[in-house]
Length: 98
Image (cartoon, rainbow, N blue to C red; front, top):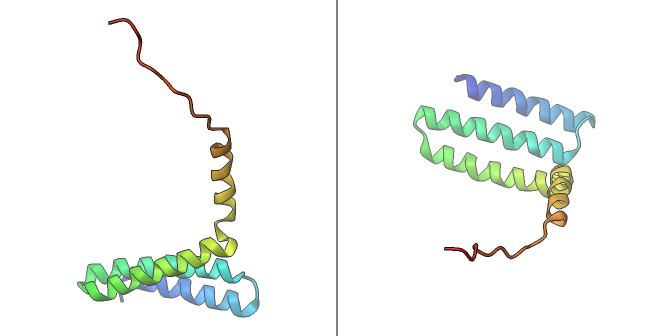
């Protein structure tokens, strides 16, 4: 078993146990599942299984979206709103001298 697949299996066991014991929120577990799907996809690419790698990529995007919209990315969204509010559009023209 490749090292990346073993690492992905370890992360999946930790995520499932965290969900079952109530130590992890569901959106946090989905973030971990997204990470393990990426690792498993990289392992599939290295082993020469492009179909499995593309399936892992699609599943990791789904898990990442569930994490992001399940308040996993809430802090990131708040940090992105702050610079947007301070932005002021200013028209800048070229100097008049030639």
